[in-house]
Structures are given as C-alpha cells and as structure tokens.
Image 1 (cartoon, rainbow, N blue to C red):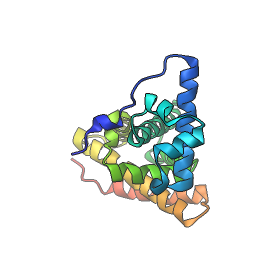
Image 2 (cartoon, rainbow, N blue to C red):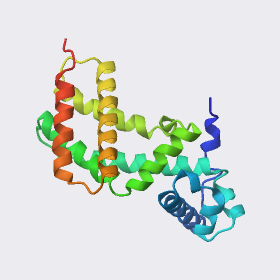
Image 3 (cartoon, rainbow, N blue to C red):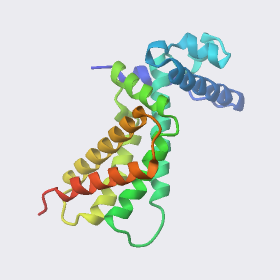
Image 4 (cartoon, one colour):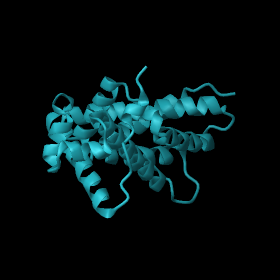
Length: 207
C-alpha cells in the first residue's frame, strides 16, 4: 500500500512572496504535465519551467508526487465549487434539470484543461495516490448524493452514495473519451450524458 504521506506538501507558505513562489511552481507543474505527460514529469523539469532551483521547489514539495497531489486537490476543489454554484439557484427542479446543471459544470471543468486532467489521472494511478485522501472527492460525492435524495425518495443512504459515485465515474469517463476524440460539441455531449444518467438512475431498484 502506498504511503500517502509522500503526497503531502512539505510546508504551507505564510508570506506573500512564498505563496507566489508556490503558485508559480504549481502552474509550471501543470504546464509540464500538459506538454510532456507523465513520462516527462519530474522535479527538475518543473523547477526549470518555474525558474526556481530544485532546492527551492523541495522547500514546499518533497517530491513530484506531492505536486501531483496538490494539483489533484485543487482540481477537485474547483470541481466542487462549480457544482455548488450550479446547484445554488432556488426553486423546484426536475431530476433532468438537476442532472443538466451537474453535467454542464463537469463538462466545463474537464474541458478547460483536458490534457492536464488526463495526465493527472494517469499519474494518480501510476503512483498509487488515493484521491479520496484530500477529502474533496468525498464532498463532491456527498453533494451529488444529497441532490439525488430529493428525486429518489425512499432510497437508502448507501444506495444514494453508490449512485452518486457511479454517476460521477460515468460522467468523467464519457467526457474524457469525448475529448480524446477531438473537439466536442458541448450541448450534444450534455444531452447524451444526461440521457444515460437518467436511464441508469431509472433502473435502480426502488423500495
């Protein structure tokens, strides 16, 4: 089992200059992953892209795995914020309307920097990073489960959590595959994905 402490940043920057250095390093890490993929990702390449010494990088991130973990955490935070914003409007909504809000937010998030998202997925799998370790993924799943509970009365909590996890996995996989095939038509992809999710949720056993 992978030691998850290897993915924890060494320290949190307190001063503005330090925070700016960390932001520069993380953006450089993202750009290296986008340009070179997992095979070309290492701390030397990131430091060179950021214009800092490897020693300066190690002050904040003890390894490339810690960089991957922080990029993953920030991506999940952005996804959570997008979903929360999508669901912030008041008023009664149908299941399809709620699913469209979720799917639209997910498409926007995953297609903003698709090469980065694919590279992070590959890195996480390669090094054994548990994306649930930073807790954001679980918060996203909990948000979806709470939304589904309003449309699936009587469903048990375990069933709602499983349905939320399945829905997220399905959405992420389909969006990734669509991006790999080339330029996407967002509305058409949204329609396909919403239809699939409605079909899946409609087939769930009811009490």
